Amino acid sequence: MESSPSRTNPGVACKPKLKPRPQVLGQLEVLRNRGVSRAVLREPEGGLVVLSGGGTSGRMAFLMSVSFNQLMKGLGQKPLYTYLIAGGDRSVVASREGTEDSALHGIEELKKVAAGKKRVIVIGISVGLSAPFVAGQMDYCMDNPAIFLPVLVGFNPVNMARCGASYLAVSSFSRSCCSSLRNDPIEDWSSTFRQIAERMQKLQEKQEAFVLNPAIGPEGLSGSSRMKGGSATKILLETLLLAAHKTVDRGIAASQRCLLEILRTFERAHQVTYSQSPKIAALMKQASSSLEKKGRVYLVGWQTLGIIAIMDGVECIHTFGADFQDVRGFLIGDHSDMFNQKAELINQGPQFCFSQEDFLTSILPSLTEIDTVVFVFTLDDNLIEVQTLVEQVKEKTANIQALAHSTVGQSLPTPLKKLFPSIISIMWPLLFFEYEGNFIQKFQHELSTKWILNTVSTGAHVLLGKILQNHMLDLRIRNSKLFWRALAMLQRFSGQPKARCIETLLQVIHFPQPLSDDIRASPISVHIQTAHEKEQVIPIALLSLLFLCSIPEAQVHLAAAPSVCEAVRSALTGPGRKRSVDPLESLEPALL
Image (cartoon, rainbow, N blue to C red; front, side):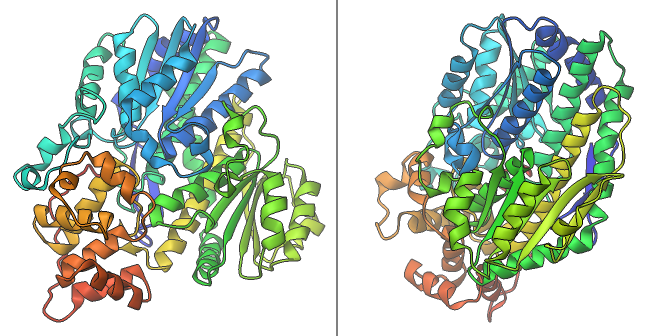
């Protein structure tokens, strides 16, 4: 699959060109017919399909395991899917990105769900081939081939697979090169992600492991893998798994044409979705206006569209340095059989609230006129329930909008329609797929919703001045991947030597504590733990580098500016400085 940035809005929306490479289709066909189908679906007793990842990838794993278990139940079959997400179920509804840095954590979680199983397919998702949580699982699977078949899904070439350094000493850092950093072992493991991926490539010849890593190009917003990477993950795996079920249930070995037919339904989803671009742009401006006024944006979705809403809100926290209350998603409907350990989510605090009851008891009473509420549903949902909730919300704020999915022949009831000042109405054509039509339409609704909500929340933060060029300047450093990304941005925009950038970054992370040699030589995990809850680490470090000033002075410069972006832009273009647009050597792959 390939894609290209939109000429009109390169930082937000991308227009896909569906040109699957023959080798990618070939890999999918082999994996479907001889991997998923043969290994588990044809002999389900004692079998299991595990979808695993950290952050966005783990949330996608959760969503797809819910969908395919629903498919199997609908066919009268025993569900065979489960998911693993770094940090457990709490990471589905809250930002806990640091949990993906442990390979041992990934292996222990895999052992628990696979206990007593005879054949287990483990689909490890890591968009940039970077998450130690997934790397450890893939390594463990290869060491136990009698039970496990590992499948690695990502969108970087294997030679760009990334691993963070175990220890970081400033003196050695200034002498080392980027390639050597990428080959350092994972902090609690003996191999690098690249070494593990290369080992899988060799086993692929024997069909004992698979690596699915088609090129989709860089993200419009550098490193924001929740966008194109998340969408591509959904398209790729839903195509593969749906075709695998079709193959088994019909007793056929379908051709690549079957895969292409499913893929093209996603291409049509793009066309249908972005026909609503003017209304999507208006919603984006409304969301930005609420956030600028210190209001909130609430995304209220029915069924699995609620999962998409939760994902979008959670991912704004680490991507844009947002407060967990700024953009929040809620799931309306029964979710009793979705989670592995629902008990992990009970009475855990406000940031773990996501249900209909939570919205009614915690959010509705405190809504204000500057808040925006977006209702996301299909016309097959309980529209009386939708109308009741909309009426309750409208008593608090007039800033309400609907994202409504319908099929040709359906129409929104007039009383409900009149409640909304604006509706993004996505009309879907009838599908005549005999077997998989209902689920393809469900997948289209989810992907369309993801595209729209990603565009709205990303664009809103762009308008708030959180993005410089196409870089997430105010992200929170919550794992090793984000640590290296922060360092890359400091180098790029300051033009300072690597050693100076790392010294300044550590000073800001540990401020007001002075840096000692022991702190400098600590494992990266120590720095991340300290930086985890600190705000505006990157802009403060960058201003310190640009103005050659102390940390307190950089904080004063930032506080005086209308936005993070304006503060840095002013420093870059100020007297005596020539703004550089030449990219400096990057410390990370394009997709992380």
